[in-house]
Structure formats: structure tokens, C-alpha cells
Image (tube, rainbow, N blue to C red):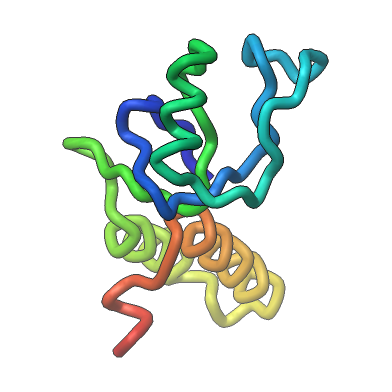
Length: 112
């Protein structure tokens, strides 16, 4: 899940959280989690003064931000001396799955 400016949104992206008027979870719901964005829906959000949304995955990569491959390399490096311990292997796998899910896909390293 990634919080992005509405100006970066594109048709086909999917909302990762319910969208509320005034960006308050106690406000009036505008659109539900899991809704696929369209041009018309994005225009409607603009007219309602929505500035940011949460979308599934990690579609927008900013300069200086770590890639999924970078994160997985750092993770492997941090666990390199302790992967013989079953609990550390489980913890490593949990973090790996989290990074893959939060970054919205597979890395080149996973396909190898």
C-alpha cells in the first residue's frame, strides 16, 4: 500500500483503503477499498478536493527510494549469519513476504 498524491493516480490503480471526505475516517465515505480507479472517478475526487489516496502495491517510485531488490538484498544481508536458526528463517520469510506485498509485486531476484 502506498499513499500518493491524487495527481499521480492513474486509471487501473486500486484503492487500498476506504476514502472519506475530509480525509477523516469518521467522515462521510466517498469510495470503498478495492475500487478500481477510472478517469471519471479521479475527476470526481479532484472536484471533491481529495489530495491524497492510498493505492494497492507501490506504483510510484520516487528518486532515492529503495527498490524491492535493494530491500531484499539488505534483508538477506541482515539475516545471513542467523539463517541456520528455524525461528530466524521464519522471521526472514515474514519480512520478505511483507516487502513483496508492500512494494506491489515480484522482484527480479525472486524470478531466478
